[in-house]
Length: 200
Image (cartoon, rainbow, N blue to C red; front, side, top):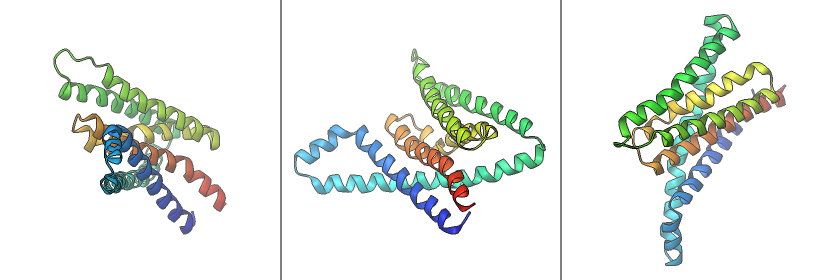
């Protein structure tokens, strides 16, 4: 891929991820920010926007590091196992383990007595649903062999990148970290092959 396309991928991912995180932060605390605006505290509102953009850009950058790390790991996996089918099977197992751990360990650590496991399962299902849709689009635009790697990246790599947010049980931080990561990961995954095809 040409350098200009790498630069394009970097900056568009940064912009899209940061914007998604900023909008998520505004939605999560909209009543407070709306009150500030009604009271004429425009400077405070602008500072909050800049802060949200800054925080979200950090996770957008983490997403980009995770993406290129996975591209390397994927090549190693194909080289070590010498079989796409075997490597895909291993990735499916890792997806299942990652989703189970996401539910089980968070529930064990953070659930209060009598609290239902449903809310913990719903987050995992949301991530899986995004992964399935993204993997389907990736497969349609490239080839059938892209489905499992795309699903693995969206589910497993996103969970690994999300660990700083998962260590707390604050719903605001969970979503404020997850959304820029997820948006950045989906964007990179669905943009890379288009840039490669454009170069070709």
